[in-house]
Image 1 (cartoon, rainbow, N blue to C red):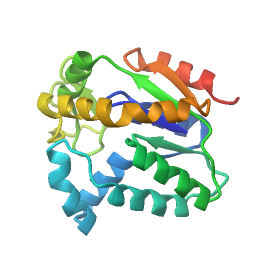
Image 2 (spheres, rainbow, N blue to C red):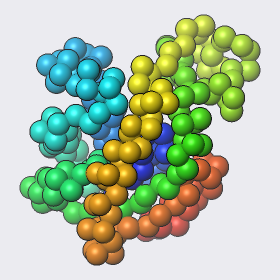
Image 3 (cartoon, one colour):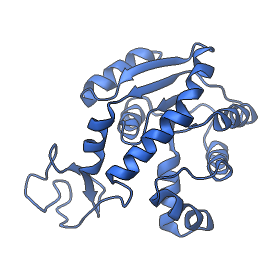
Image 4 (cartoon, one colour):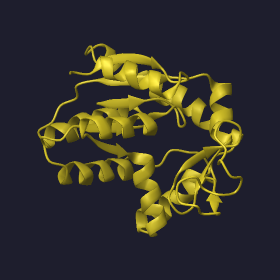
Amino acid sequence: MILLGPPGAGKGTQAQRLIETRGMVQLSTGDMLRAAVKAGTPVGCEARAIMERGELVPDSIVSGLIDEALAKTPCATGIIFDGYPRTLAQAESLDALLTAHGRHLDRVIELAVDEDALVDRITGRFSCARCGAGYHDRNKRPRVEGVCDVCGSTEFRRRPDDTEETVRTRMAEYRAKTAPILPVYEARGLVARVDGMAPIEEVEREIAALLPA
């Protein structure tokens, strides 16, 4: 299945719920690229500057990462594509990759969002530098200021691209490049839309209702 929506729409959160409840595997191109950046791989070095400008990395890099991940995942394991494909070219590439690995696409779910609310959601988020627990300036402060609720660390971090300018750039790119792929999947009867601004539990329930029991 594919989870669509601009960065910050909640794709990663919902993918994690599906992993926990259904044993699926999440392939998030954003996470895969950030891991490559952190590891200092050639792909990571190439992608770093592009990501920090809020632009999309070249399709050749993204498709290569997806191909490698598919090869490592057992065919019986369900896969969630988080934030991929983003363009018509990537959608065509994904079809070819799935066919090559003996798989097919079952469902495309779009998390619909409000741009201004999304800007607030993203620019206010930060995480524990040690365990990765997520927080927000207004909506989810640590219980003890400056101390992680989960592991007790006092070090936090923010993504360098979590700025209003970057968020709005990505929204514009999403509208211009990703929205056009929806009619392709709609013609195949695969698309369903969920309110991405609803509470996490409600979004989870709506997604579960769209999937096989």
